[in-house]
Image 1 (tube, rainbow, N blue to C red):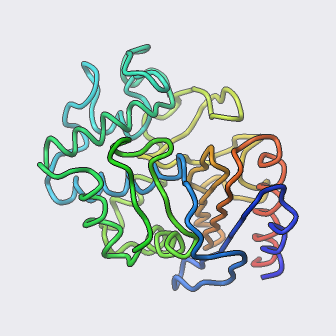
Image 2 (image 1 turned 90 degrees about the horizontal axis):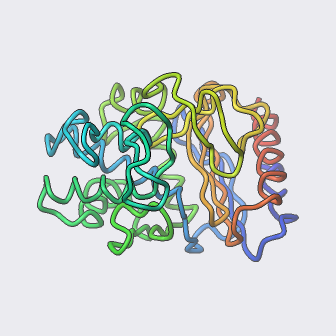
Length: 276
């Protein structure tokens, strides 16, 4: 795929990218060091959320079980509507009223899984998600529990396997994944999309941001409103566009900034155009 060569011009020390087709999980293209271990930052939330959804299906707990502040549930924590502050275990809103993007909420979410299962979060995620998918290089740091920030490390090669799972799930019931990625949790909720400002609404599923009609956005202008995924402060992203039957992963080792807000949408649009 010629479009992936665009990463050669990115102002970053290292970059790697890949595109996966949803209908059959085929790797359509890859560029850069596919086995280089990159810090994922908040892209880790996708992996964490997937482990939580597996736990729900395994009966460890339920989405509407209490977790976090009074009135909050597992569902609220996944959807960033628990009311917890960004990086503090401090309540700033009633659950369900605002989309307050919260790293602290994912820490609480991981603790809830640990308490309910009796298994350390990193071990649960490895056994429930990474090992079955063959993601042998991927790990999470227990110091960050369900690492909302710097606790996740992975490679493009591993994330291509995860991207294939997100398009044709084997570890989850397809209905569970659809609810998490295609149905807005707490519709109409507004809040800040990190790096891009306040959005009304700021649509989110269960751990997965839903693009909808947000603009500007870290995905491309050609990405459909159904696109879901996440980006990370470490200069990383993963999106899935069901309308295009594609997923795209890009990992770098330069923190998110204006450079990323410029080149990421360009790459996404080029990938979509090349596979139209």
